[in-house]
Length: 302
Ligand SMILES: Cc1cc2nc3c(=O)[nH]c(=O)nc-3n(C[C@H](O)[C@H](O)[C@H](O)COP(=O)(O)O)c2cc1C
Ligand SMILES: CCCCC(=O)C(=O)O
Image 1 (spheres, rainbow, N blue to C red):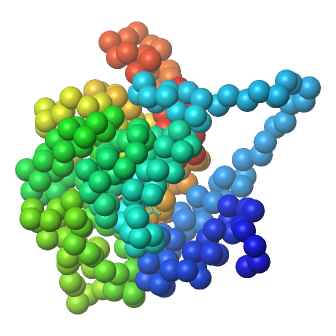
Image 2 (image 1 turned 90 degrees about the vertical axis):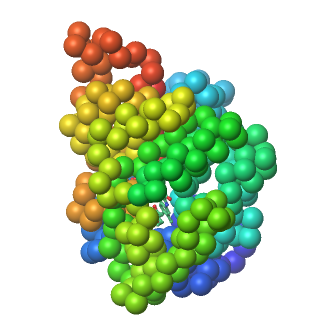
Image 3 (image 1 turned 90 degrees about the horizontal axis):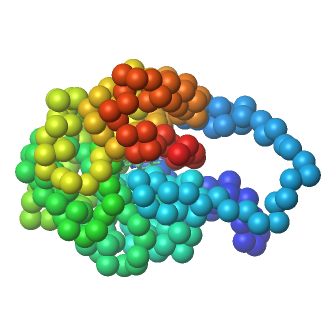
């Protein structure tokens, strides 16, 4: 490819050349037939812009707040695992990017830089994403480390009781490296003779029994606001309100979990409308209207 990229899609081609195939496939792949992966892109393409003219756009301000934190645009960096597979500085570089753009960064539980390294690298507003391990004491410790280092919220990813069946990772025998955050606590280096080692890692460490009642446990170990990530239906959004969390992230995990789940953007509006109706109704007046957020990787309605 000649010269600097000018379209965001060109970065994918650059990454394909720069990365070992195993890592490129891990970053870009979806689960099983990758139907939802295609739908995620197609659904966005079907959304057509309805332009209005003769409006003063000489000054544009897209800034808003998310959980009280100012952001230059209604965009958050989604938590994604293991950035050092793509860049020597890993999540520290991502955090600096977030700080430079004045947007909030979600740091993955499965990051290759530690919570402390990311926190001390710059002044980006950071939310900490967690998976709940069978060893709850380790998850509690991680939450406390994030709290101590000034993270602004906990994002509980709730769509991964098991890792999605990612066929490219199975073929490539995707590695599961020791993650620095967990050194001396638990081994994340898994070797499975059946295929994807990260699938084995998730099966070995993630608590597949996690359910709604465990939100109480999470609330009991942290004062930070909690966002539940991975909601795709109005029913579960209502359950999240009932569980008393601070917000939800509508997401299908980049189509990496349940294949044939709907494209994230295709369910966002329905969920938003349901919640707006409920929050406006008498029954739910006890929940603070203004504390609710509807988020997905691309949009945020405050
Ligand atoms: C390479 C990669 C790694 C990811 N790792 C995580 C992770 O560690 N934790 C998590 O909650 N989500 C993870 N995700 C999902 C993203 O946070 C995000 O949900 C997804 O990329 C965008 O899809 P959505 O619009 O349906 O949210 C990962 C996604 C990708 C592409
Ligand atoms: C066991 C690592 C899981 C990271 C993740 O959430 C993803 O790859 O989608």
